Amino acid sequence: MSVAVAMAIVMPSAASPDMFAKDRKTRKTVDAAATTLNDSTRKNITRNDRRRYDYFFLEAVRQQNAGHLDGAFDLLSHCIDINPNAAEAYYMRSAYFSEMDNDSLALVDLEKAATLDPGNDTYQERVAQYYIGTQNYNRAITAYENLYSHHRDRSDVLAILLQLYRQNKDYDKMLSTIDRMEQADGESDNTTMARMNVYEMKGDKKMAQKTLHSLVDRHPNEPMYKVMLGNWLLQNHKQKEAYEMLTAALKDDPGNESALSSMYDYYRAEGKDSLAVELRDKLLLSPKTENKTKNMMLQQAIQENEKAGGDSTQTLALFDRVMRANPKNIDIASLKAAYMQLKKMPDDSVKAALGHILDIAPDNAPARMQLIQMLWPQKKWDDIIALCKSAVQYNPEEMAFYYFLGLAYYNKNDEDAALDAFRQGTGEINSESNPDIVSDFYGIMGDILYKRNRPEEAFAAYDSCLQWKDDNTAALNNYAYYLSELGRNLDKAEQMSYKAIKAEPDNSTYLDTYAWILFLRGRYQDARTYIDMALEHDTDSVGSSVIIEHAGDIYSMNGETAKAIDFWKKALPESEHKALITKKIRLKKYVKK
Image (cartoon, rainbow, N blue to C red):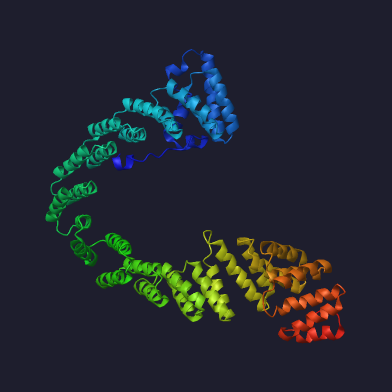
């Protein structure tokens, strides 16, 4: 195992009954235990007890395999009563204690199993892992050292020990553990780097430098090690030695990107800004420089520019030069757009930058979405539709584009196209879909379908909407109101409407719906309470003609005819039902449609 991997311990979860079926080595131990128990396990019990033990142990295994865990636990405890030296019974029972969140008893059983059968690697390793899980690092070290003493070929055990000693800040033990790794597997670059890291942790800069230098000496023709040492020297303020090492690396490989980047850092640290900028531009304009390096250097240039006062013209000029040299580089184009947004540059400029990203990579969903969001407040529906139609070709799995496409059509009053867009979007729904978006999909489909006199399809869409998001207040209100218009299922309508006003108690439309449903159910006084609240919260300067007409109907059925007529007269100019309202005024009473 390499040191790089070993530096992070992954602690297995505590044992559970299921693990025995998955752990082949342990399963083999369990299955063979009843017939091949070692001498230490069988000593001091009679032949008859041995036979009894074998029977009950095998039965415990059978019960466990059958999923009867309570029975298996009781049988294992009985086995231990028969033979208190049965390591495998303690080991198996520890898993059940762990499942019961009784870690202290689980650990007792694991320790007992490990003590009774010290040659069993599985027992020893499991108890050691348990110590790590409980952060008892000293006992974990003892257990792993004991395990390693029996298996000198286990470099993975040494890797864990290295991390445990690091946890205890025992740097000398870490160094001795690295020595053992090298004795077992030979010296490697990884172990040398691990040794250097330990010297760094100890604060022994002299030995850290010497160790890094040994890597350079071992690989004289590999510039990466010279760069590594040069960076270390820079970080430790040894500029002259760093420069010499980086120069040597560039002599070996004049175009070495890492060496050039480090030399740039050297120039900046020494205040040689003109040389630094010259080197930076060389890296940024070179087609050979990796994108990661270019992005890092551009971000660094932005930070330095901001510290110096934030002259965006300089930064944009740099972006333009780099983009001319890298016309297809999507990362640089995206960074420029992000910078322009950060600096709050004019919308047209930002849109142009985002458009350039789409010219390079038309499947770039984030850039397209940002453009749509910028255009939305301006109600540029045709532009949004064009963007979304391209999006569903390049990113058919992105439901948000169908959503905005449908809404844009809906806002243009093109309901057929809106319905088609939403239906296309529902074809992309899966278990990972955003419930809010899916719910709105179906909710708006319900609105359109009802307006097109297709109530059954509309109600099915609302049902789907509420399955995805049962507190979608717009859908709850509309579904309830449309049911009330048809005089259907008023119990359900009332429940949905009440849920909507509980969520938004100041929404005049929702209050009106609830008042109207109460009116249809003959609860006129309650209806008046809620229609008054709807009128109070109706912020429209001229008032909603629907709410005002409903107020007239409700007041009429409460016996307040004069007020009802006033409401009807007020609703009349803006109403779509002028003939009906005129009839109510003439007859001085509520009249159904």
